Image 1 (cartoon, rainbow, N blue to C red):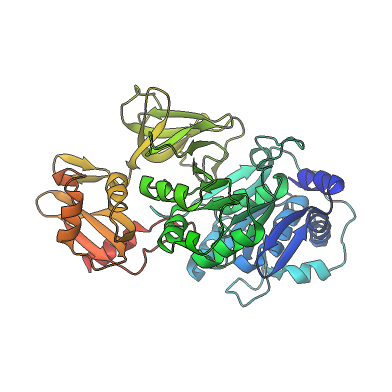
Image 2: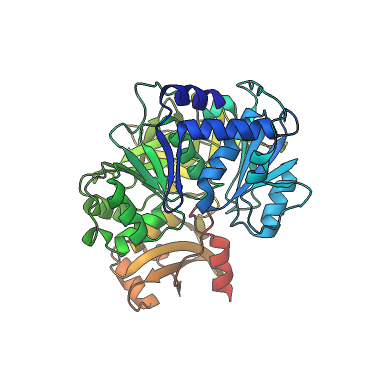
Length: 477
């Protein structure tokens, strides 16, 4: 990773790599020089030591410097958001065995014996003149999963994984853009992908510290962004706020959605709100990256997540990895072209098999190899003799004109075992009978919700994924 920055900074030093709205910017030369100074200030070569990086969304510039400094010093970077609850933060720092915690200098509940503000690190005299050249197969990063189905796990990636597939200097990604806009938080896989784009892609990467639909749309307009990345929750908020009525979004040629499947009604709405954009759904996971599928929204295949891209491989298989026939439902597996990731310091590795990653989703492939998700394996609702796909019910709910956001989950039922429940963010008063009547022409009887929660907002984690266990708790109360 350090070689990518040093070589590009040498040929294009004044290229702006990162811009944080309202905070400043960072050129490639500045990124290279500041990260080298910080790397040389560590007491000694890190030799694989884990260094936790705790920064807030306004501190993307300092975070980028710190992340590269750790890699230049031979360490393993562990990106963490300062929005994590103190017990979560403490767990991750202890779990990875961090020897140092570099942070932005604010009031933080960090172990004082480990914590070092970046400014203090930069003010120290250099301990050495040279930084070690890392082995491409050595660990570079540990990124924690979102923990929606259990305790977060550390996913380890090597330098070779993060630099795959290689980028040719004359064919940099998103060359149609001068600016790429996103609002992903530090410590997420989506955020790390944006950091890699800042390092290797053609446009300057612009981030918004705090997402609101109006601010995000204004930022797109201000920079005439050619590329924009969101998560489905952000996409729904942009549409509900009708930002296209107040802002010029015509510059956007590619609008990518990541972190979760984009509901077809939301994807269709984006094609109208962003009239010149190809709307692309990216499907991967912290464990599987850089393997992914990509789907440009197609009204003839509204629910598809596309086909494997960038040398990735995709299969639908049973639990032991044996592929099933096209059209049959099974587990979704992805495989990167080379250098897979692995869980850090966990002996149990059922998610990984010969380079393949079990995605935890159920899906099927059509005859042309297009992927369709059925549901998260853990989210499927087994109601009596039926299995209900929460994705399918959520997609139908998004068609309701008064539903701004929706999530579906299972609740205990004395006869059926489990029953369907829905949580919605509504723009007008909604009752359960209203929702069931609307869905009755779109879904089977066993798929109709038997309980309805109306909320001001769905509970989501830092990656934008709905925390369904929280919805179950609310329903029980």
